[in-house]
Structure formats: C-alpha cells, structure tokens
Length: 325
Image (tube, rainbow, N blue to C red; front, side, top):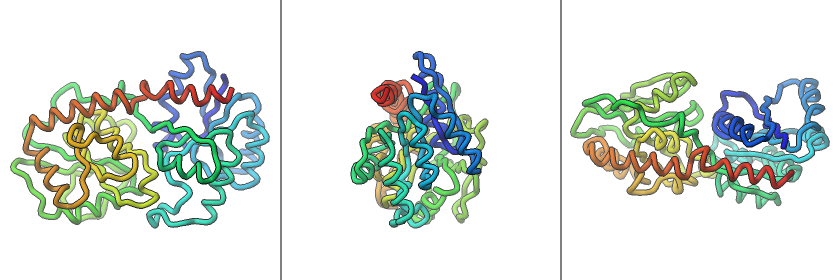
C-alpha cells in the first residue's frame, strides 16, 4: 500500500506520537509511506491535493478543513482517513463548550472520511454520534526510545515531574493551588517541563521543553503527574503525560478523567485521585517510600510496553489502513 499522512507541523505531539514512530515500521513491512504538512496558502494546498491520487490511503490528522479544501481533498484521495486525538469539535479555551463552526466542520470531515481513527473511546463516541465509521487506535510511545535512565536518578532528592505545553499549564496551576503547604519527610522538588513557565507562586524547577532534551528530562522524573478537570475537552485527551512517565519507569498520579482510567492501573502503576487531600497523600507516600516508588515504576514500565507502545499498537493501525485497500 501507498499511504500519505497529512499533518500540521512536525513538532505537534499528534504527529510526533501518532505518525512519526510508525513510518519506519510500516515501511519495513513493505508499505510505501510518506508524511507531508499542510501548507497555509490556498494555491500551495491545491498543488498538494493534486498529488494525492498516487496514494491508496490519505490520512488527515485532526485538521478541520473548510468546504472548498475538503471537497478538493475528497475528490483526489482514493481512500480518506481522518485521525484525531483531541476533542476538536469543542472549544478548548472554555473546557469544552459547544462551537457550532467547529461542530459543523467536524461533521463534514467525518462524513467525508471512509474511516475515522480515534485516540480513545470518548472521541470514538463523538464520531459515532456524527454518523461515522470509527476504530480506536490509542496514542502510544516508542518504548525503545522512551525508557528508564541507565543510571539511578538524582540521589537524596525525589523529583515529581509534569510535562506539557502552555495550553495545559492551567491544569497544573489549579492543582498547585490545592497543594500549597505540601511537604514530605525528605527533600523533593517539582520539575515542570513546558514551552512556557506556568504563573504560580508554588516553587517549581522549570525546564524549557525541547525535542533534544525531552527524553533526558523525562528520565529525571521519579514520579509523574497529570491533573485534569472533567470536561468534554479533557475527556478527549489521550494521556500522553502518563504514557511518557510510565515509559521511563516513573509511577504516576492522575485525575480519573477519560482514557487516564485505562492508562493508570490504580494501585499498581500509580494512583487515580480526586481531591487535594488524595493528591497530597499519594504524592507524599511516593516521595517517602523508595521501595514503593521502585515497585510501581517497574510495573508502569511493563504495562506501557505491553499496552501503550508502538510495538503493541502497530498491528492495529496496519489492519485499520489495510481494510481500506
């Protein structure tokens, strides 16, 4: 098969974790696969659309095209797949309120696609409600790259880690408001990896995100956290903060929202918590108990390799695309 993946830009998490890791394995399986990025200009997009006829399947990532672009795309693509890993049919800045324009474009994309691939069951439900054919293929990580550090993390101090983009900083800030005064029986720090420093009075060790530094920074986490509010937008998230943390062998503490309830094996790879008191209790236990942290971290790594890795999900993605050939 010849497959073209169309994404927005190479540094987008949706491309980095839902396309890039699969290109080589699919090619090694005998497929011809390419990736391209949708240009801004109309004429540049028209040139791109004209090239689509040479592919058996075109996979569009998350983009909500207008009527003219979508019509040109659909006419040129033999088989069209729509891939999404966020609740793009809702407004992100208000936690998931209705947006008629987004909803209309989402329904048009679903209607035009031969298949929709959704990152979790919540998103799949939105596709079904729009009348589309959908398969769930979770967002995963290359566990050959994202793995525990070869040497022990910093001795004497425990690092609680959070990684994310500026658009998700607000979830961390809201959590920290409820953790003011948090302390444990040994030295610890909160390391924040992001493309912008969160505005909070809580003491943090801020590290700017970069592609080159990402794995090393994640490997410095002794514990990884993922706070979320419970809104339609948040339920559409695919839990990458948890998957990345578990991949590098860190136990996780998370809000029980959406797919997080599947990623975290509560009490084994980490904990699902709701209240500030539960957050403080579970974090304190992980900071103070080396054996508990080690045991949960090893379980988290095993679970991620088995269920949330490129190796585990590749056959599922391949079967979905091959069904259209």
